[in-house]
Image (cartoon, rainbow, N blue to C red; front, side, top):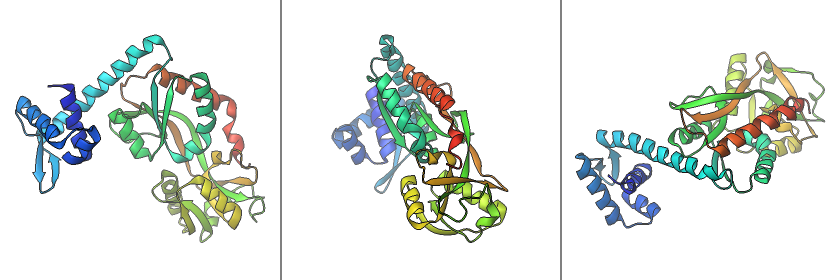
Length: 301
């Protein structure tokens, strides 16, 4: 059994199609099919069953896929560990982060990290929490920054801080002077919100349901920057984490109460996974920046 065959096999698994996998691998489909056939002959089991133009894993294929991913990940981690004998002089760091945290946490961190470790290439993906957990579990991401506790098997969380969702308005909004707003006061109030695909929106929806209210969703958007721009132009409120108010002097965050929507942000790591030197350096920098930034000062602008 060759490593090349395992990589070919996993490419077919991920693509769900021999032709697309061959294109991804830059080899011909007959060559790919031949390698899969040789692999099946060696292990003595069929790995894929074909249903029309579709394929799916057999029971043997499911078992091999799990162990193949683990084996290739262990080899990748060994390569990283060996390369680090030269220190933080080269390497790649793949990080997944949720949008609401990326908006306020990463810009300064990326600038500081790349200045301190210019030889380390950062690959930062803005993803949903579930996709981050899957990427970490499969080893495609060295770590993630999302929400804890985690839901995926094989992924562990380390808490960073707790964030609250607040009502964000412009300074000319009629509610801008209020010290806090009960969630029930937002019944039938027009709001601009993230789409339900985001954890932030789902957290707010659960909070509104708990309070027994139905706010009027005026607009749904997929980016925080666009939501904040719309809040300025339309004089309508939104509900987002208080920390997005960093560098937004014309907006105010008003605490929400009864109940207060909150959640915990944390690092997401593969359980018992190797933490390379670049990962450790980035994690340490996050802790240092949070310790001196005073993020809670962003509430109420």
